[in-house]
Amino acid sequence: MTNKNNNINNDSVVILIPAYNEASVIKETINNIQKIFNNIVCVNDGSSDNTEEQILSTRAELVSHTINLGQGAALQTAIDYALHEKKYKYFVTYDADGQHNIEDVITMLDTLRLKKLDIVLGSRFLGHVKNPKKLKIFILKFAVGFTNITTGLNLTDTHNGLRVFNRYTAENLKLQMPDFAHASEILDRISDKKLRYEEVPVTITYTGYSQAKGQSMINAVNIVFDVLLSRIIKS
Amino acid sequence: MIIQIILIVSILIVGLNFIGSRKSNRTKALKKIFLVATIPIAILFIIFPNLSTKLANTVGVGRGADLLIYGVTIIIIFQAFDQYVNTAQEQRRTSLLVRKLAIIEAEQKKLASKDTIN
Image 1: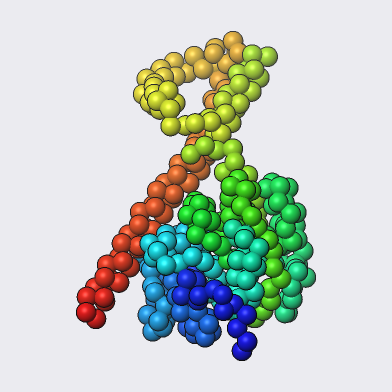
Image 2: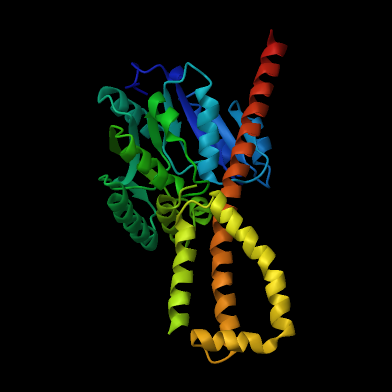
């Protein structure tokens, strides 16, 4: 493989994976990543299956929530843990279910570095979707519209798990929403902190597994409610 | 009617309390006064059943039982809102604890494995 990113030392990159009941796929996902990147932090978010054992059988570092908190909390734990390691300059969030393509991370890293950005977001609508479901696409597009209005950003895909960001962004994300609302929260931070961002087309593979695992569409109601509420309620 | 004003004001207070800061000492004190006052007022209404009807009539409601329903409705709505916010706050605190614990644990393991290598 021609390595486009020979300017970025792969050892300064850390891949962050939140995992909740992903025992059947997590090992394969990690092994795929390890073809290119060595540093992987995997947060087992209180899984009730043997996700933890699966992670332990790889070379990824394991951080384990005793109870299930939600993907946002798991991501923040991964970020906090990775920040302790001074050599990490680039942080990558990556879904455990294997829907992402690790090659995309290289392109995203290049974009981040060359254009001096703070965060690069994967977009499935600029890229290529394998086996999409029409309803899913419709609701995602709706979510995009909603988020663009509330954050003032201009994005094509607001709920993509694949993101690459620098240390400054990692230090400033400070996610508080425990569940899937964290995707909107990240965009809020981009908007608040005026982070330099860009979207890069990425390939998403919807397997039967990822579709069954993916957030149910009624959850969009929860997300909209939580996001709006977090803006009016001072905690 | 007086009751309509009272009810509208009450529900607005419930709403404002929901979005406003609820950690203030004033809200806490009001809640406590309300809790303590409930018992004697309840006993009063039990001993003098006509009292509630009289009170109802003065605010423009026909029966005491109706007034009671209005009051209870407001209280239930307040309770639901308050509960929602408290649970969310509690969740946030639990999250912080669990996340911190997870990181400490992972770091200890890392140190331990380094020790065995050296």
